[in-house]
Length: 76
Image (cartoon, rainbow, N blue to C red; front, side, top):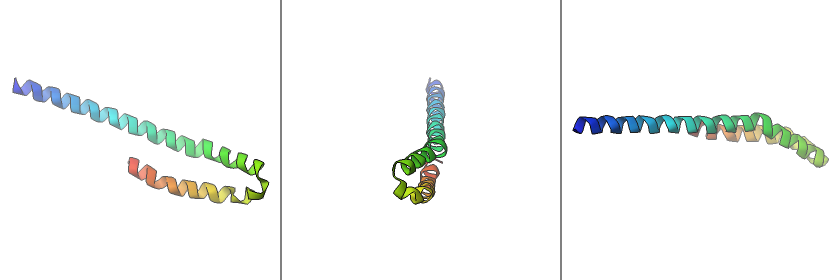
């Protein structure tokens, strides 16, 4: 009886681990997609609305991408 409870516990633990890996992968993919597709659009829209800050568009993107590196490292 003790063996079957160990087997059930291991299957439950493996299932939880796989679930967490899938969730972290989905978070990683979503964050990466937002960095690639959404942020440049936001920066362009802001440059159109505020022409006096257009020169800050690329520094904003560079800083955002650099600051996202620790987030992706933490998800790894």
